[in-house]
Image 1 (tube, protein in one colour):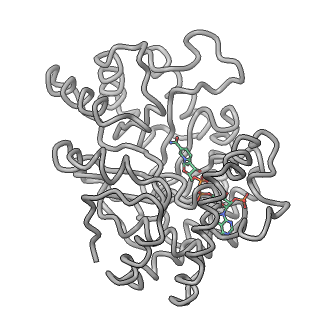
Image 2 (cartoon, rainbow, N blue to C red):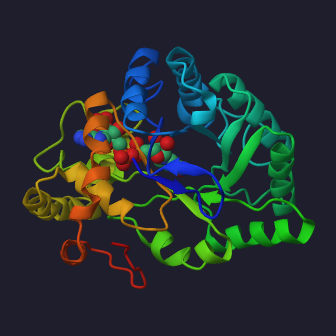
Length: 333
Ligand code: NDP
C-alpha cells in the first residue's frame, strides 16, 4: 500500500480506502462488515469512510461494532463521517443540513454510533445555501478546537464554494477545509481534473474520491446483462438501474466493452484497470473503494500493484477510448 498526504496536511491516508455506502446496513450486517474491513485493513487500508445518512445511521453503527470486534489500534486508523443528510428517514427541521446546531449534534451522534472519541475527518456532505458560510466554517473550526474532529472537508462543493470557505476562514482566522470528496472515475472527470485544478495549489486541497468503479459499471460485470446479485437490483436503487439503462448509460457500457481488451492485454482485471487509472492522478489523495464481498476487496486492492502497467502509451490509448476528454490534465508516471 502507498500512503499519500491528504492535500498539504501532515495526515497520511492509504491511497486505497474503503467506504460503507450501499453495503453496510443494507446488503449486510456486522459479521460481513468485519470480514470485508479486515480484507481491506490487511491490504494496508487505514481510512474507512462513513456518513450519518448511510442506511440512516446503521452504516456507522455496524462499522463501530466491527471496529470494536477488530480491536485495531485507534491511532492507526483514519475514520470519517459526513453531516448534511440527517440520520433519520424523514428529518424534521434541524435534523439535517449545516446549521451549527446540526453540525454539532450530528458529530456527537456519529461518534456514538462509531464508538470513537473523535473523528479524523468530518465532511459537509453537500453545500447548504441556507446556512451562512461563516456559521459552517466556525462550527467546523470549533469541533477541531475541541478535539472532536482533526480535519474538516466538503463533498461535491463547487470550486467557488470551496474558495468562499477558504477565504472566510482566512478572514476570521478560522480553519479552512483540508479535503473535498468528489466523484471521480473514467466517466466523471471534469470536477477533479478541470474545475478544482487551481485549488490543489491555492488551498492545498486533498481529495478522497468516490465511486471509482461508477457503482460497478466499470467492472465489466454488466457487459452481457445484469447479474442478479448486483447493486442495480437492490430495492431503493431503481434510479441507478435507470441511469445504467439510459442512452448515456448504454454508451458508457459500450465504452467498458472496448476497455476490456486493454485490461486483458495488461493481464489485469477491469476493476483493477479502472481503480489504477484513478490512482494515476496525483491530485487524488485516496480512492474510496466499495465492495459487497471480501473477494472484491482482495481483487480491488491489487490495483495498487498494477499502477506501473499504466504507462504513457496505455494512458493515451485509454484516453482515445473514453468519451469525455477534458484538457489540462497531466498524469504522473
Ligand atoms: P464503486 O464505484 O467502486 O462501487 C462499488 C460496488 O461495485 C460494490 O459495492 C460492488 O457492488 C461492485 N464491485 C466492487 N468491486 C467489484 C469487483 N471487483 N467485481 C465486481 N463488482 C465489484 O464505489 P461506491 O459507489 O461503493 O463508492 C465507494 C465509497 O465512496 C462509498 O462507500 C462511500 O464511502 C463513498 N461515496 C461518497 C459519496 C459522497 O457523496 N461523498 C457518494 C458515493 C460514495 P455489487 O457487488 O453489489 O454489484
